[in-house]
Length: 346
Ligand SMILES: C[S@@+](CC[C@H](N)C(=O)[O-])C[C@H]1O[C@@H](n2cnc3c(N)ncnc32)[C@H](O)[C@@H]1O
Image (cartoon, rainbow, N blue to C red; front, side, top):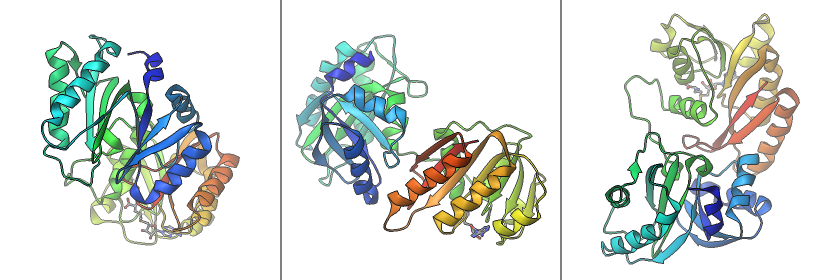
């Protein structure tokens, strides 16, 4: 696979959270030239584009906040939803083969985004494509693949393409990921910080010091402390008993504003904030407290979005963070609900 193959792309499939479709479409229309909406599913849409390589470059420059996943398509076919579609998918894949090298590690990612039920599942499609490639000597290796063969299926049409996984915004099919429901998590919120660390490539190591603002019941604190981080957890609400008994956790049962007035100048490696409060106020508090973050330190914060004016709030946050931090990235993650995540590096 060569990036030059992107010039064979007719368009791309963008995946997003259904409620945020208008926000993503606005972002795309303002930053991508020559795109044309072809079809919409529940949580994704197919766009025609003049130049996919340029679209990928634009995404690498600065992430789209509301884009969960993207893949190009080189072929589109009409389908009927019966198992006879399998022949269509096989012949689409056959046409992609000249773009794939036998030595490349490949993952097949298939997603049905259709209101009309199909006679087959995502899993069956994935197996179909993977078996087809393996029979022809290609290496299917989902754990360390660099190349993705992607198929998105709508009511009456299907779109297939190949791409570098790193260009798809997320490594997971359609940006959808599931952490296992382990008994060892305090609350669902813990998945949010785990996903944020993976997406923004935040390196956490033993002995680091972290400040967790809005820590209760303690999911984020628990995640950090499990990796040997010493956590100062600030929240007027109670922390879970399981978190309170951790040796490397200290609970300051007070508001972040109060904590700011009493704490001496400790230097933190990481500052996280999941406080439930007005976004502008939360941004101001975080930026003020970033004085206690060492140079190069990381800040992760969820920005709870209002029902209207979300983009305005995001732009304000980007501007205010930009005064205190060298790098500011903002993205909606799979585990974010009515919120986005900011990752800033001081
Ligand atoms: C969504 S919860 C945080 C969940 C947490 N990240 C976890 O993983 O368990 C929001 C928290 O923000 C806290 N909060 C709201 N205003 C605050 C303030 N001014 N200072 C500190 N915490 C605050 C609330 O008490 C609540 O526990």
